[in-house]
Image (cartoon, rainbow, N blue to C red; front, side, top):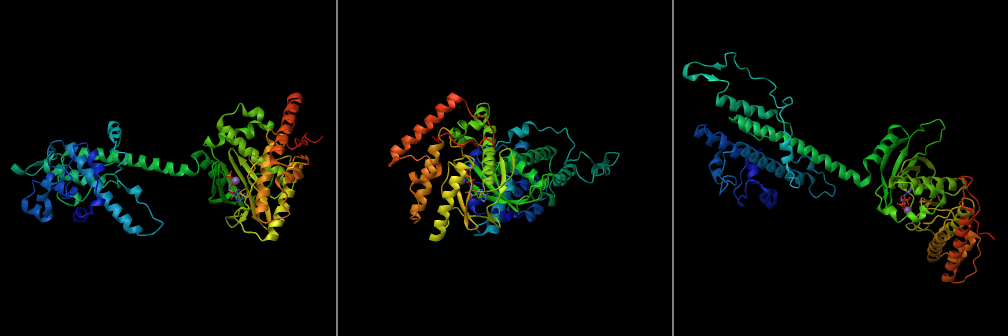
Length: 517
Ligand code: ADP
Ligand code: MN
């Protein structure tokens, strides 16, 4: 590294107050005199060199005496370990500053930038390296050993008379140590000391070696931590494993990216692969993968959907939260299958694995079909869509024995000139203790959307409710209407109390609702 380049670093790129306040060796005065590791090292360790040599190689060396490390009360330079660490830390900071400049230059004004973060040495958020030092034990094979062992003569010394030098000779040993620095981990920046006639004492060398080792491990740990946290934003490791397995098995060709991130789920697009088992279900060319979030908070307020759903009632009480999430996925699968059987346009189930549901993709070439709320339909298409939805709601209720329970322009996609229903994990049977209230809410959303959208034929919510359910509630205002709905739900509850819960399981559990007189 060019020491001059480092010394002229712009002030903002140099370690700022955070470093100064954290410095365990006292707070150095903020100073405008820059100092590079190379300078300090040469001052400290090469002072035995002849002066002219020194001056020729490092002209700034005299100024170093005023440098940030050797000023004020901080004059104790007797500890080699401390000094070695200080030097290395300073060098790492310079290295990082240089890296930041390169990163900035590399990225320029580009909106998409490449981060050099992983190459950084100093991590200001985690300055606690002490735990590494504690568990340092040099009991393993020395990774820093020089490749070519320097030959020490058998007799242990060379030369004659007063020129005799042994392997313990300070200068020889110091040079050897400097050369061995090269064998530190490749990411460990040892500066330009190798090129000069630098003599490191054993003590300094060992301290540096130890420091190199702990820095390497600390750095690896930090990068690892970071990798996890960014990945976790999308899916947790267990989910990732599930997805990898699907790709590995060839069931999915590739997972291309995320289509939607909701409170309760993340949806990915994938290209379908080949069927993995003999039942030869053809995997659609494009798939949507709905991952139900295993962070549980959002699901807590959905309890009422599933807790009172007799299909899941028995299991609910015994389940841990993770299993409840899986139940949502399972529920969506069952409901989609029912809809599929009734011929309602909806995603086709491909496979369910734990909390991950793979289904056919509504859309093309990775572009999901737009939601009804986002698409501008001609008045003709709008009318067509309305009648289609009216029809689908009736089918859903009568043939599938389901109420969508989250029906709105957000969960209807426009694709291939028709409306597709999605997002049915919360759908319930009409006999659910709140099933009719959910249906009424669905009707209100649909009516309002199409009335606002200019479909004059659109029924109001009460008419729509009656058209879907055949319950013929006569009330002509919302309050009375809702009161009747709740009364009916009460009748149903009492019925269930008296006759016990239904026992049949899907698909034969589609008993007609008991509201009919
Ligand atoms: P939630 O609303 O609970 O997050 P959804 O099932 O509504 O989950 O999915 C979220 C979004 O993902 C949808 O609005 C839709 O844009 C997209 N999406 C979901 N399933 C599919 C599918 N099978 N094909 C295409 N897009 C889908
Ligand atoms: Mn949705």
